[in-house]
Structures are given as structure tokens and as C-alpha cells.
Picture 1 (cartoon, one colour):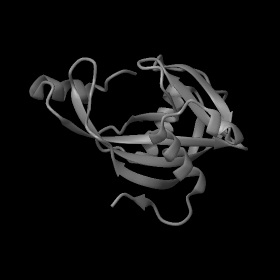
Picture 2 (tube, one colour; picture 1 turned 90 degrees about the horizontal axis):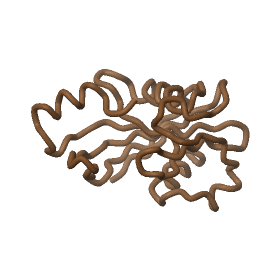
Picture 3 (cartoon, rainbow, N blue to C red; picture 1 turned 180 degrees about the vertical axis):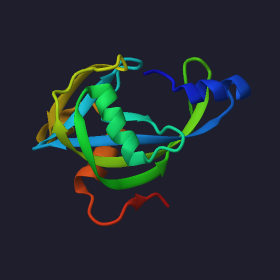
Picture 4 (cartoon, rainbow, N blue to C red; picture 1 turned 30 degrees about the horizontal axis):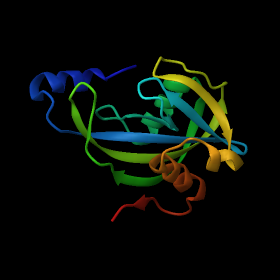
Length: 157
């Protein structure tokens, strides 16, 4: 799925103005590997990411996005990090800023594949190979937070 309907409706009213959105990063693990995708829109390698729908819990959104985008099922294990991303501008001129929720998830079934057109590739990357994976520093930090998390959620200060 591309842009959620509720955002398109808001954009009709506010145009390209900055929109504050709730985001989710689902770091899915299976054995000694992490689920990665290659995004169709910009070619970036990331864990599954998405937008939380109005009234939806971040953990539920993480599970939904993983199934929609990569065709696998997972259970949410922990909210590991909540942080505000820098404002961004999209190619169409829309501006947004996300409050991202990093959720560690455990794989429960399915083989990864680009399930909805948002990604061109989905695969299990061995954790031992993450340092060599073409990840941006922001995504690498989200994965690291999920893999090393213990205790309560991490909050930016």
C-alpha cells in the first residue's frame, strides 16, 4: 500500500504543510537473522517500516506492516525505542515528521518476499553480516536497539 487514505484526506486540507505522524519500525528476528527489505521508492535497505493508522497500537501496526510488506507473520515482543525523526520532505513536496516506535518482533511463519509493491526485495540477513549490510546509520541503530534491548523502552532525551 502506498500513502494511507487518512493521510491523503489530510493532505487535501493542509497541502504540503508539515504533518506529524506516528511511525513504526519492525525489527523481525528469526534464529540468527534479521528481516530486511529493499524499498521500491528510494532503494534504501531497511527493516520493515510503516505508518500507524489512527487508533492503531504501534505493536499491531508493526505486525500488520510486516505481513503486508514482506509476507511473513510475526509476534511483537518489545517496544525498544521511541524517538522523533527529523522533518523530511518527499519528492512530491509533502513534509512530514515521524514519532518512530521501534518494535522487536519474532518471526512466526512465512517466507519473505515483496508482498505489496513497496519493496523490491525481502530477505533474512544473518546478524553476523549486519555490519557489512548497506544500511544507513539510522536503520543500523534501530536494529542494534532491538537486538540489545533489555528492560523498559528506550526514550530519546
